Image (tube, rainbow, N blue to C red; front, top):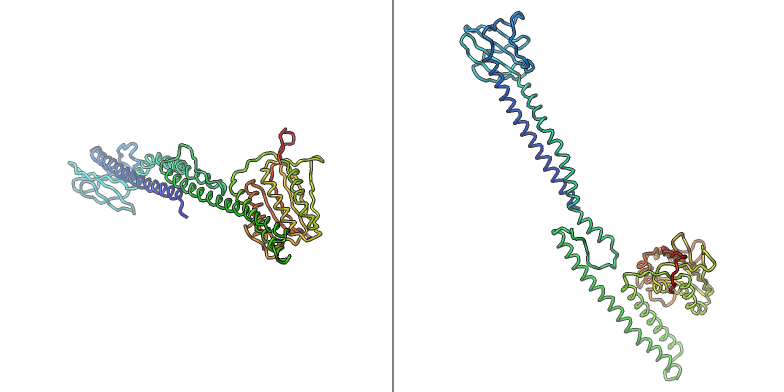
Length: 454
């Protein structure tokens, strides 16, 4: 995947490095040319300024001209008389042939030399200097000129990194704003006023898409809620009419047939109720958290389902673990209605899948500042291959019992998601049955005076 940041940094740093290399080469060439002109001037000055009494052939007894600091430049001086005889030569220096007047380049001793010759009245003077001296001076001049550039390049690279990071910061902020949103949050993006003009069209397009998704989602939720509501009323009326007709004898038929019809109607009514509950949960993406007594909600749900448990000869009970006091209310921050629906669906599901004579327990637990609960039964459990799918809507396993709709655990998953709770389902170890664990409810400070809601 292509990265804008890497692309910008790569090309900017590469372009800067290439420009710096070209500038360094140009500066070196300029310094080399200037050094050459300076040394040519030096050679010419030495040649025309030599004293007229300078003679000898380099036997070590003649006087040398006072060249001062020029000796460091390795200048070689040669003088010929009018007859062409060499009358002076610098000590410990190579001997050059007599070259034409003016500047010349010559190869001597494996090195290149720059020479200058001038014809005077009684003599011919020739001065030579190695090219390496000029190159060394040009390099020193270039380094003296390039060191500010060597400091400027790293500073500029750091500046480019900071500027690119600052310039792309709004894109990072937009990504974080989208990544931290929940799946139900379809509100428009609201960023600060420093949003660059180039990113505003992208934000506007995203907001338009979010608005259309919100409209479509609302239409879907409204349709499901309206359809469930419209179906519930005529189905309830149909059930009442079947019961009335069965009592007054106006409905003729076998008892088993009537029971099947009534069972099918009950199943449809249960499905519609579950659809209505699921639509209501989907329509509430934001949960208002208030202090509620989880124990009181559990007692109420257990009481409401006790008749169903008794009819199935199932022992239904409530247990409290790690209670702070004997009357610990297990006060948590939650949506009271959502907690009641979650507990009712979990316990109802456990009762439906537990054989006669079985047991279903609601166990409240504490873990530091967090509260949770387990719903444990001793039924047949869930095959390991189906555990990841039981929370899908309308999914019923191959070994599912009862006349459920396949929406109970989906509703539980939706409520847990709204409350940002952990939800796990596992088979009991060493014994039959299933355990559904809900954890992560924030415990309320028991010392804070608040009114509890159930």
